Image 1 (cartoon, rainbow, N blue to C red):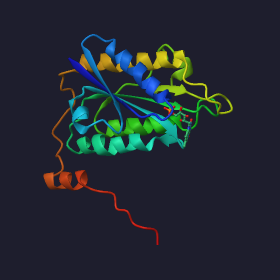
Image 2 (cartoon, rainbow, N blue to C red):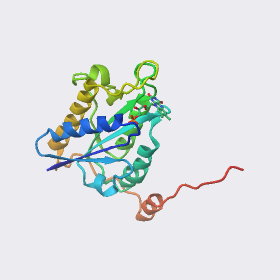
Image 3 (cartoon, helix red, strand yellow):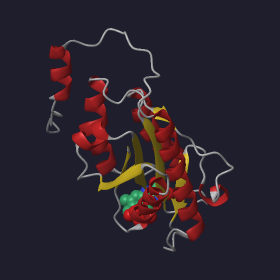
Image 4 (cartoon, protein in one colour):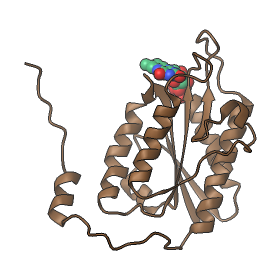
Length: 211
Ligand SMILES: Cc1cc2nc3c(=O)[nH]c(=O)nc-3n(C[C@H](O)[C@H](O)[C@H](O)COP(=O)(O)O)c2cc1C
């Protein structure tokens, strides 16, 4: 069995719809089991156990949502320290309001998520323009839905955008199935000491009050 973990957050429901479509796409691939989790609920153990991770975010001020960033800090970054994600498969998706056609900051946000995965040694799945729905929801880096009209009026993500998300989920799952159990990545670079790993893994942000 190949395990795909879909992690997302959503306030108005559009990213949740994209996440469900991504999860359905992954589930459509034979031999795949899917876990769908809110970013605040997903655990380090679930990330460690998965073969493929699909991470989705709403756009917030030209960037990823703070809840998704916290998920990255609490799971991906800690597992990165211990090289536990090397060779796992990753993909991303997002939803923005749509002001200015494609929405603002999509590439920054998606590349930010992909950068965290790349740093952890994951194998990244992009979104080819051959993907159904890519004409309205493809950013090349992942699936992207638009929930707003030209003047920010809420319209909701469309069926075509959800199709694109579905196929992105299926692509990631197929790659994960094909690579499962294969140790493709070279190993042997010197790992940081256990003391250093513990220091970074347990580091708490320092809250310094403004002077
Ligand atoms: C505080 C805030 C900041 C936002 N910033 C952006 C942005 O920078 N770019 C964008 O395209 N949409 C932006 N949006 C619109 C949301 O991304 C959009 O409404 C999306 O559907 C939210 O996802 P959700 O429906 O899953 O909650 C912002 C919305 C809020 C509330």
